[in-house]
Image (tube, rainbow, N blue to C red; front, top):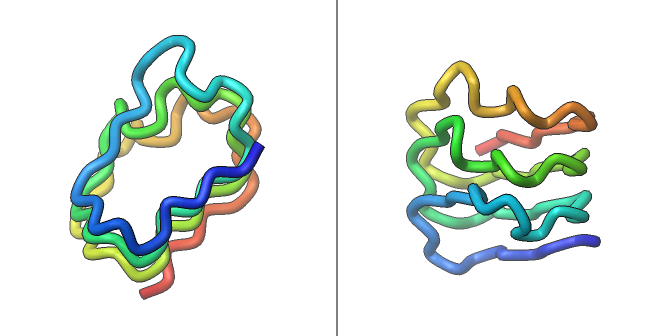
Length: 79
């Protein structure tokens, strides 16, 4: 499953529900206004293997942000 949320003016993200998008494998959040990521940003996305965060305004990423993502292969952070 792929979810595209490109150019939606998102400022923060929280995928913290136990059942929310559990089978999501790719997430594209590029060209938004996200400024920070924390341990709850992707917590329930356990099957996620690719995240695109290009062209956001990220200034802070908490150390444990990607901790629960055991299948994560690629994170795109280009500006």
